[in-house]
Image (cartoon, rainbow, N blue to C red):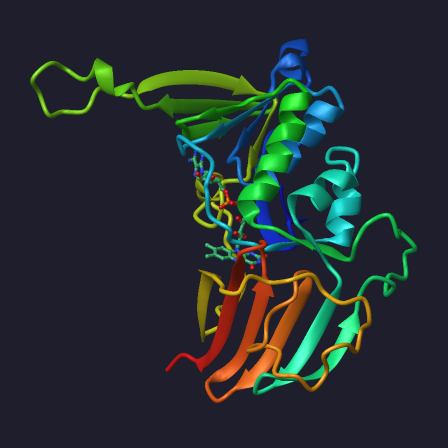
Length: 294
Ligand SMILES: Cc1cc2nc3c(=O)[nH]c(=O)nc-3n(C[C@H](O)[C@H](O)[C@H](O)COP(=O)(O)OP(=O)(O)OC[C@H]3O[C@@H](n4cnc5c(N)ncnc54)[C@H](O)[C@@H]3O)c2cc1C
């Protein structure tokens, strides 16, 4: 079984493997669901399972959470879907609500759209979006998981798996601690192996998913051959609070005279379309669409 999930504004591919029918035996029913990968998709999946009282384990080959900003916004629909796990106030506390998009031509502000009231679904408790780095999003989801009694098991890799009618046999590998290396030798200590019987296996293990590979699932889609330049940069002076009026600042040279928190800027440049988004009180995400790759 495979489907596409939408987490963190990301169209992410999730593969799940298990018996075609629900597990039959009592043993299979009490076996945990094994989630592979503690990115936003795996964390959200595991937290939902824990919320519903389903036994769940979640593993990640990485020793520590990724510190990188990567996806820089979470949109209202995602926050609404995750609301039972992450109360709206936590998003607001962790990031900056997105309130406007300002379109510029060569840095001159032409139009500014206020987003706060543009929601047709009437869920005004939530901002249209919150600007925050993916590391913060993952931290919020990790907290939601921990509050439901589940910890991410780090340094653990799914090595292989085999599904049958009742569930999935999984082989996990945990790198042995450095102090268990053979004395005097340069050979690394052998990985510790663990066999796990899971009722289901959820592959949330990213673009090079071992679960998808193991299932022989294709990764359909097309490659967009464009060159994007992306950087998160410290800015001086730091972004300031946005004025309340939507049209405030129109005509000024926005990108030179200071950036406003909660605003997303799109501007033409001689090199292509440039997006600038303050993602924290001191830093901006800068993305330049550098055109088609030759
Ligand atoms: C520089 C950069 C900028 C980005 N900007 C944006 C953006 O602006 N907007 C946007 O929507 N998206 C953006 N993305 C993409 C976004 O980060 C990903 O789409 C998102 O992380 C996918 O989430 P995921 O949970 O599916 O997988 P991942 O976040 O990739 O997590 C997969 C996890 O699985 C673990 N894993 C892999 N194999 C195994 C294994 N065999 N056993 C155990 N664990 C395993 C990995 O260690 C990893 O932690 C950006 C990405 C990068 C790199």
